[in-house]
Image (cartoon, rainbow, N blue to C red; front, side, top):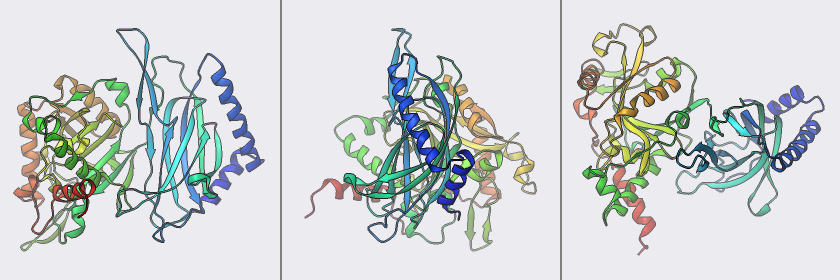
Amino acid sequence: MPNPTESMENIVDQHHPRGRAGVAAKVDGAIQAAKDSWRGVETKYVDVTIQFIGASLLPVGVVGTTDPFFHATLDHRLSYMHVSLRFRARVLNLKLFEFRSSVQPNTLTPVWNEEWQVKNVPTAAMLSLIIRDKHHKGLIDHYIGKFETTIYPGAKEATIQGPMYKHNRGTFWLKIDSSPSRNDPALIPYSFDGPVHYSCHSSPTVGALTHLRDTRLYSTWKVYIKGVPQIFGDQVQHWCRNYRAAQAIFQGPTSIAVRSWIQAGHRLLYARSVSNVFGVIKSAEDVFALFRGGTHRSSTDGTVSYAHRIKPAVYTYIISADDDSLRFSETGAAFFVDFASKHALHSNCAKTVRYSGEFHPRPVGGWARLSDAMEDEEVEWEIVIDNNSGTYSPDPDLLPKVKEIIGMNFAGFRVVALRHDDPELKASTEACRAYALSKRGVTEHELQPHVTEGEETLMHQASRRWRRAVLPSR
């Protein structure tokens, strides 16, 4: 593993012949430029690429090991503007806009080499980072420290400041490139521009189980996609007041407890840990990796692995209105048992989402035309996406926008958008499941949420944790 200090020194030498003194001088100049920008009338914007290289000399964690990760923000929030047609004035909308890193296991010198591209950033913007140590059994991660810097381009070496102004808690290394943004007043400031990256999380119930037929049934994915505010604008889908399951979650005297259990389950599902899988989507091969998998065992055919093949499966998804991420899992995921709404579990009981429904991959022409003798790379693929969500009942007229967003982020895949009541959707979904049953060893009960013998459900774990948190110990 490369030393982040050496990596940074190489960058400094490459971009600043005077070394670290040159970096410090440029930072001082950026601070002055930021002050000058605020005194003027016109705000200038740049497109930035931030490379988070790594850190060194981090403190040892309270349990003897350190599993560091960080989250970064620009000006602490996404502050984007849109033009109000009613008032013909610019209205400020505040949303959390941040970059969350992977968790690096058991190291005081983590190397991330992760990238964040953001368009239309004010030249006076400040980049803030908070570094934490992942606490795997507790609800709160341990705080290591933070720092703040300008977005002025160049290599940077930042001192991590600990809590209560404690001494140096380590050094963080990063590099920023920037170029002037297009002078277009219609552009949205702080626009995420990639790379499209994801994290894959395992349900906590999987840890106690052995001899699982398919671990994908215990996985959730969170993909940070681009283009959502540009395409959707301020459009969101409210929870459906006519849907009985949604009523139980969002209204009535018992809804608070129901939401609390679902939100506890969401936190368990989407918690960051060293067991998470992190990746970047740059090509069709990266999308293949997202949909590949499935190992099945039986007494008749032994163990058959399909880890190298795209799995014929239907997924439940939401596009979050909170952070514009795409969140999904297999519709037959085991952890859905006992939850009133799959989509509410993914959205963390948000009252609104950008969109929601189901999707499945298929070869162009349908699963019936696929032969397992052919490699996945020899076949053209597409994603069939719909608005099949009772909880949010999204507007089918917005499906073309969903198609555009998915096509923009899932390289190499065509996108077909169908209404939930379209006969073509039913036929395609049934063909997908039929192929899974006949060719991939999937069983009928795996197509729907189910519980493995001896398994503690996610709902049971979530409700138990919720009771611990709200009820006094006796």
